[in-house]
Image (cartoon, rainbow over all chains, first blue to last red; front, side, top):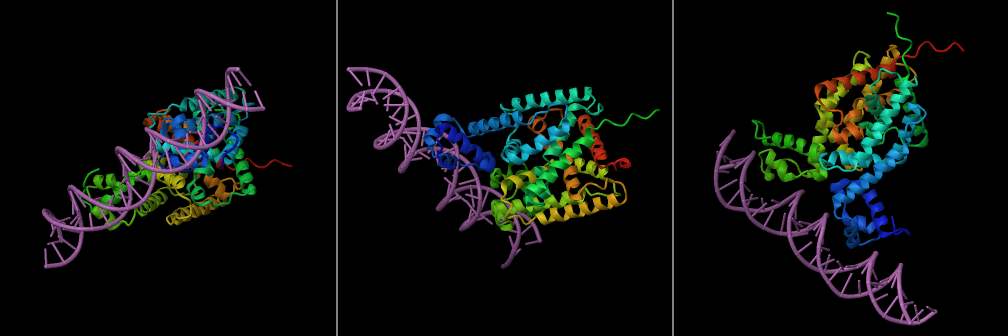
Length: 199
Length: 199
DNA sequence: AAAACCGAACGAACTAGTTCGTTTTATGTG
DNA sequence: CACATAAAACGAACTAGTTCGTTCGGTTTT
């Protein structure tokens, strides 16, 4: 976490990213951010008006990366879930940041979430297309299905037993098994039901 | 949040419960807890050695209530998911508390989680029984299925779009629809696959 | 009378944000 | 290339406010 070749401003943002993801808004320390960025506080406050604003900047950056990384394509919702899962594995910081924001915010003062809502709407629209293409059971309400898929993909991040104790291990074998289960679960979710009963 | 008929110790614990669920360990204020409990700080520190210890006391209490409330019975995993969902709706504080603990803890200094692990093992055991009874597809690894079910039941708590913005509303109609979707999703998950292909 | 309790004040440590003098880096000019 | 000048950055000290945890005299309860 030392001085890279980058701008002080970029170094600060990067250090803030790690700090906020690890400790949250209340737990983060401005001095630690500056130190890890090999920058001075004077510079930090020259670029960012406020601890809270810096936090929001980091949040928006994370949301932007998150939403541009996992996208529903080819009407393939299980593959989408797999991409979401991969993101939770490789960018655990992003998920932590979102959780911090959810817990530490009134929800009143959030600017950066239009990113999230736009992303959400777009994926919901694509689910609707996948339904039209017969790849997803039409009886699901798209937005609700989207939430379910997200819940499944991030299940191992939020499940208390696993999350609090690192139970089940985190080696690549265990992770691969989890990924397969995510995909299989979503396949079962979206599979169009067998030709409806005759009735 | 005023003086009930209860002991000061109980009042303090109850106020701490609300405070920690709302603000977390770092964000909680000892003075606010004492005030909302209509107790004095002198009493608070007479009963609880430490802010951190009080936090852990509250966490353990929440975990205990949580784990005794939603239990898998009658080999009925979808109903179990429904009970979990109900718990997330009625006791949102418990989920927040668990999330705070996950985010604000190294995982090294957690005593209260044996409660969680014991609960988890027991539910996993019951899933295994449900599999033996033919009510749950036998190809699922029980612990993994447990995590998936938990992820589905708490999907609306953790999904960024919904959680950060209250999108989709939280009236009883919306909640009932979500509950139905949780149950339907888990039904699809656990449904024993049709008689395997001939091959 | 003894124990439990309150209220208020206090100390010590910590932290966000500011200020300022000095050093480094970039930029333009002859 | 040499040099002057301005902007950018550092470092360290400082302010003002907050917060945990303690102490203690007085009051209520048992």
